[in-house]
Image (cartoon, rainbow, N blue to C red):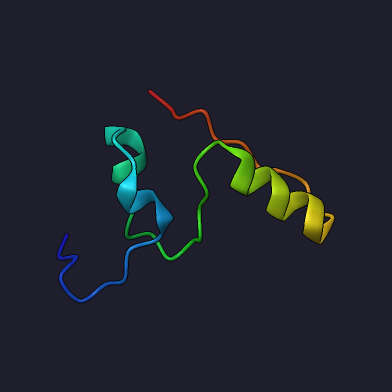
Amino acid sequence: MDNQNKIPNRLINEKSPYLLQHAYNPVQWYPWGEEAFEKARTENKPVFLSIGYS
């Protein structure tokens, strides 16, 4: 996959290989943390949690 012309999302700063493989996904993912929960509270939206897959 060529990521040279793509804009990374906020997962680009994570250390987890699982999260990094989604860093150029067009979905604006949030890593687990207060920023994600605050955005959900502010926008009155549920949190969608992905625990990975095997």
